[in-house]
Amino acid sequence: MNKAHILLRDTVSPYGPVNIMQAHMPDTRFSRHSHDGFGIGVITAGALSFCYRGENLTAFKGLVNTVNPDEPHDGRPAAEYGWAYRMLYFSEAVFRNAFHDISGNSKTPYILNGVINDPKLAGEIFRFTELTASTHETLEADSAFCILMSSVMAHIDKKPQESRTYRLGGKLRKVKDCINERINENITGKELAETAGLSLYHFIRSFKADTGLTPHEYSSVRRAIYARDLLLKGMTPAEAASEAGYSDQSHMTRRFRQFFGATPKIFSKNIL
Image (cartoon, rainbow, N blue to C red; front, top):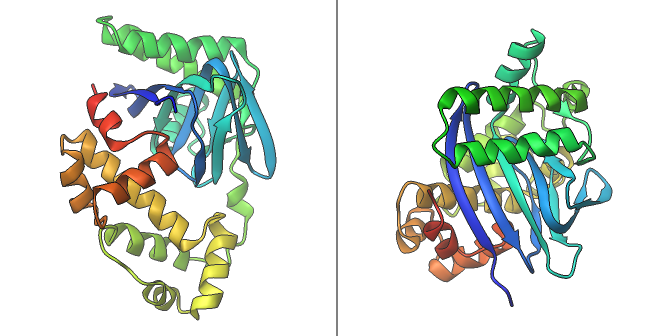
């Protein structure tokens, strides 16, 4: 099996931190997961297929692929040699800051489509990743990111979640906070159900209805992200596995392959 090739780096945009990932995924399949923030990228080779918001989508070379916060999705190759892409990941706060700067509106926008055919936007994403990898002046990169985000605004609408009724209501954030605060612990379903004030059965059904993921799936994703952040801070894979509460390093490796398509070793070797 061909191994994934991943390069990670962080940069600071005029609107806040941005994580950049350049990757080639020759034979990778992502399990269902979600992100806290937004993701937007361009396919530079091959093709990526993924299930997103009830649709089976395919992003071919030159197309833009996106993901909104808390939207479950998976991923798989749609070409013989997989796919390569350049992705930008940033928080809701970054998107909100950009939206306010460009439009004067203070609400967080929502990207309408998971795959976008916009050559101008695709080129701007590629250019921004090139600028931040070189010795160009900050002013040039800042200007490029601002132009990029203004192009994204052609593909947005208000967040549909604003009018959505959640089964858990305000308890959803409380449950998520509990999971994240105890991410390295072996928390039980009963404890989370008690936090929500429901029986275990009704809690699991309600949580999945609200998020698209079971509590276990959500917790697994959050733990993997936490461990990845520890690697970004300089921990070894063994140290990160222990700190994140995995039973052993091989357990963490299985989760990384499941959610990120690469091993912790690959991540730790390719962080700038």
